[in-house]
Length: 289
Image 1 (cartoon, helix red, strand yellow):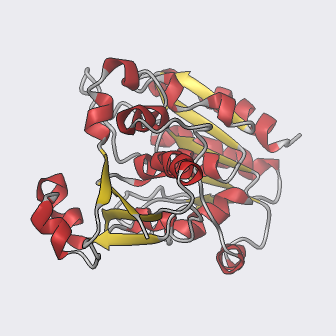
Image 2 (cartoon, helix red, strand yellow):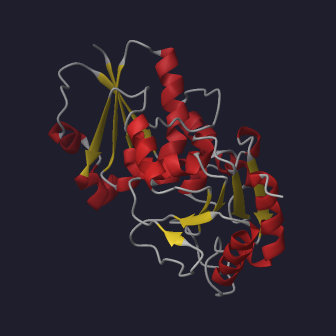
């Protein structure tokens, strides 16, 4: 069987943005065995169960050393049968961002152009099993909303007053107080085990959950309130109702609101975005009176 090997050293959001390219390739080449090599980090496990990928390999060496190890010796060390010719495709986010025309398009479009594989949609491909849905339901006995207040790729503000994508913690706390006053809702905050948790009697922190369980939580929430980050792309993949606090340090096209039919994008400088603007967007998306 002919093989195609895809390789990428990407975090959650960028990994998700490669999946429309994989789907397009699968449609063009239904008989080719598709292998995807990614770094061995929790957020890449979102590829588990992807119907367009035959084999996912998680490389600890790639995670620890980065793309510098991507050579023939490294490829030969992997559990692959390379006795037959296989095409190798590299999802290089730096290659996308260094091309001005690609940087102003959605990341999936940039990957598509880089690999010369046309795509039909930019919505990420995610499979959530019934077992993963049941596990998510274990955490959510009541209707709930999700906060995602962190972003891995978050440059410092030019004026030195923090990070460009951050929305001030006191406004997250105020939003939690407002939602609590609306009715009998839970508020769940998600993030990695390394993220600084927001402490509030109105917020239940579920940091460090497996990423597929997080996806199921987003899918069944009344609304996800998130920065521009991997969780925003994850929410788009599961059609979650969302409000994205979207910093203008990133092109608006990366939000791809036309692909997010249940999404409100609040674009600009998050420091200038007031509590009431986010509150009104959440109320509208969650259909809370």
